[in-house]
Structures are given as structure tokens and as C-alpha cells.
Length: 251
Image (cartoon, rainbow, N blue to C red):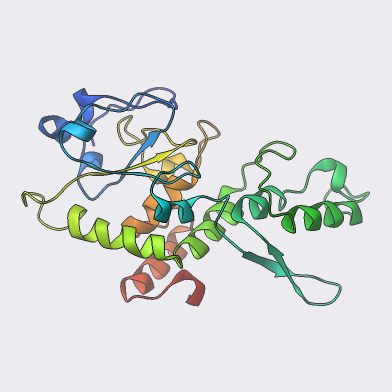
């Protein structure tokens, strides 16, 4: 990989000097089978329309109806874990609230400072039962590996939208790079940024405090069969099972 990484990654998109066809040799990360992720609110490389890229808005603002299933605002319901009282499963109506209300903040802990208090469970259940997504109920916390990425991956993989996008990815982004029908794929996300253009892998992205890591990164990992949020041993085992057609919900 070429050493094009900046000292600090930025939530921005690099231009044609990195991403156009004649310049992709600058980094192994820019191969066709690696999915680019671009920030929605930043200028995009001109080569996207000029070179007929496969570009998908995977947020709630998408104009392609089938892509709306990728949005955490609409993905759901999401099973969480069993209620200690009666054994029933806690279920959030959408992925956004599953993520936001799984976080335990200091004001919602018992006297030991660690255990969730009764007030937490009431707050969390109210959030999970709400159809309206709450993006920032109390702030953010870096629990991507144990909550956000696994939950999002498990449920988005079961959608018709994922099956369709996966078929497109296999058809146009994998195989012989010299095939004239092959095209790069790009996902647009409000919390996305051009990690490949800046020289970063998905494994590096999930361990960074900043910039944000939107759901497009998890979606890219699924398509590439790179479950970068798992430990190395678990990662290799699960990825091998997925090659045989197994879904995460069955592993």
C-alpha cells in the first residue's frame, strides 16, 4: 500500500488525482473489489459520473426506494437480549434506537457506578419502543465493535436490498480487473468519509475516535466479506462460513 495516509484522517473526499482510473495504481486499497465510501456533504470526485461508477446513497435520504432499507432509521425490528424479569426479548423498532439506547450513561448506573439502574431500563425500553429514531439521545460512545457493527450487519444482511446490492457487487466489482464491464462501487453516507483515498483500512477505521464511522463502513465490510469488527480468530471462522452461504443470524 502506498503511504498516502494523512497524519489525521478527515471526514472528506479526495478527488480524481486518487480515484480516477489512471491513478488507481497508487494504492492496493483502490482495487475494484474495495468499496469506496464518500461523505454525503462533501464534493465527490468527478470520475464518479465520468467513469460510470456504481454509486448508492445508503441513507434515509436516498432517491432509490430499495436503498432505504440500508438506513438505520428504517432497518428493524432489532432483537437485543433477554429481559431478566420474564425472559422476554428486548426488541427495538429500528437500528438507530437499538444502538442509541443500548448505551449506559453514568446517570443511569447503580451505586457501584457500573450496573444499569432501574431508571436506565425504563429509559432504554421507552427508546426501543419508539418508532421515531433518536440520533443523539445523550451523546456518542465508542461501542462499535460489540453493539453497532454486529447488530447492523446481522439485520441488514437479511434484507432484499442487501441481496440486490451484493449481486451487483459480485457482478461488477469482483473477478478480472481487466474486464471492461467491471466498475468501482461507492456508498454515500452522512457519517462516511474517504478512508481508502486517505490510505486507511476498515480495521483502522473502527479503532479511530474520529472521524465518525457510519453504517456504510459495515455494509462495505459485509459485501467484501471482511468482518473487521470481530477478533482475528472469530473473524476468519465466520468469514469462512459466510463463503458457504451462511447468514450471520445462523452462525
